[in-house]
Amino acid sequence: MLSRVANSLYWLSRYLERAENLARLVEVNRYNSLDIRQGDVWRALLYTTYMENAYATSKEKDAGAFVTFSEENPDSIRQCVAQSRENARMVRDQISEEIWRELNRFHLFISSEKAEELWESQPDKLYRQIIEFCMLLSGLINATVLHDDGWHFMQIGKCLERADKTTRVLDMLAYQGEPDRAKLASALKSCSAFNAFQVEFNNGITLKNTVSFLLFSKSFPRSVRFCLQQLDQHLHSVSGTTTGSFSNEAERITGSTLAQLNFSNITNVISEGYNEYLDSLQKQFNYIGQQFFELYILLPLEIESIGYNNLYWQQQQQQQQ
Image (tube, rainbow, N blue to C red; front, side):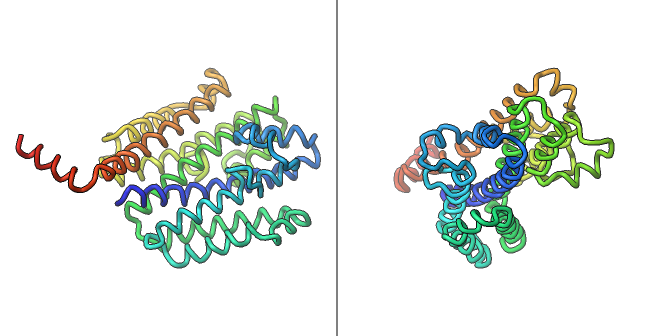
């Protein structure tokens, strides 16, 4: 697969996942801001999503509008959808007509005045629609394209983004000090994990149970451990390497991080330090993304830039030695 195609498919899916996760975070935070000092709630969200500096220099004073619509914010929901659509446009022949049509519809909706009016009058309804668009597109990606390398690249983007955002939800808990039950419930709702958590833990919502569930659950799709399991499988499917071994640095660090999660529990998190543990995971996610880019996108692009004739000449020289 061409490296440019791989890059576009990866970011198409990753930007969609980012838009969905931001919608969940803003939806929950808007609700919380009715009961808690509004500045504290939004400050935590902006801090954990690295939007603080952009917001400080922005003309937009409403943090919710900044995260949702701002053209000055490269990671606003509107911008994420626009970036996802642009990447889809570049790989039209790799995706289904249904994906292209729904992504276009999503882009037109979030870019419209109607979306802004809905945000003013019924913000909960707006964020529900954004989440539903993202879930529909995720379903279409699974149901209407070949499950070949291109599909695996899309899943890699989704898994990395989802794992990262789950750790940032947990980061928000730490930022706001000792969390009470309401804050813990909000963290679970930000990951659509509240009902699943209640099935697995029937002894109440505590900090230990919440962190344990969102980090280590084997069966909840948004837990960090589950995302890393899926990421490991997709990376091995692309390379053809047997699971349990590795053929590149992206597979090695993913396997190492997964092993760390498989053999850790909440006691290890507490002993290492809550913030330190989360920071370590986020750095590893960034490193995996960097190694994936260098392996499947940057290096092939460099080879392509040499030109066909030079590459052919080099291959001939190697064969003669």
